[in-house]
Length: 216
Ligand code: E4P
Image (spheres, rainbow, N blue to C red):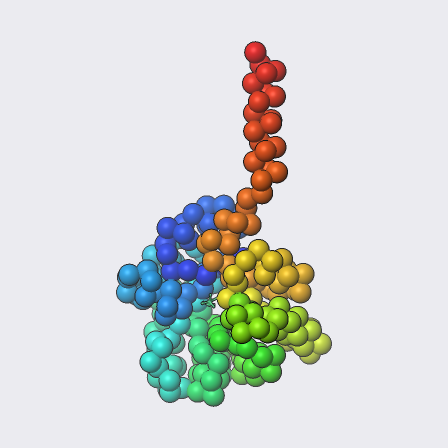
């Protein structure tokens, strides 16, 4: 499983990219709004930091396929690594199909059922983004969605990549890795908590103390 970071905060992206673990970035309209920058400005900054797939979503107010297609073509022109993120709607599927035929990479977002993922894959999506955290929020086991999509895609030889999204904690990351998700898009706070363990800190302090004793 590869890692993307789920943020439009360039400081967070720069930090995690420096760890050498990042293969890409996902953004959405809420994350871009939180960054306080325009979509174009923040996306350009991100393309300078990460050499990997960068998902930029069509405007939340763009609902017609023809408008998503036009916007998707503009997003694709920003940089060779751009992936056009499109919501899972009937119009979204039409746009994914057209953009896919033009060789433009797409990420179908807001996936909450395995059949939505299958439709998106068959329309030609390069990636699907099932949202497990939001399912957990409403009392449904989100990781089951990832397991089901992995099983279906394997069974039918589908090469659309599965981005486990709406990740809220370390257990989500662990379970997605075990389920066989291709990618997890992880918020900065979860990256930080994946890194730390109290026994690592204790171990480092002990090595430092023993080293200092040995060189006295
Ligand atoms: C994925 O691409 C989405 O941007 C994201 O994971 C949504 O997460 P949330 O449910 O925490 O908003």
